[in-house]
Length: 87
View 1 (spheres, rainbow, N blue to C red):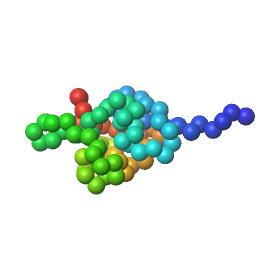
View 2 (view 1 turned 135 degrees about the vertical axis):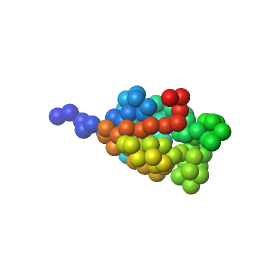
View 3 (view 1 turned 120 degrees about the horizontal axis):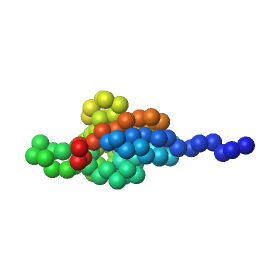
View 4 (view 1 turned 90 degrees about the vertical axis):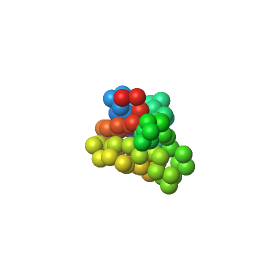
């Protein structure tokens, strides 16, 4: 008997990343070395600041839905995450 698969595969800006089940999207961003969630109106790179979604700096696009809070969103297998990084 093999152990259960305890990971989820998500795609961050086109890059597949395996993360432990139950982690937040911001953890997947760190695992993908994508340390920019969005750009400010002046083009500055932004990233999660408070870690609980209160600062709103962690907004990303998840499965086509814009402005999702990465700190408060749990990763699901097959989830697609788009940031305001270097794309």
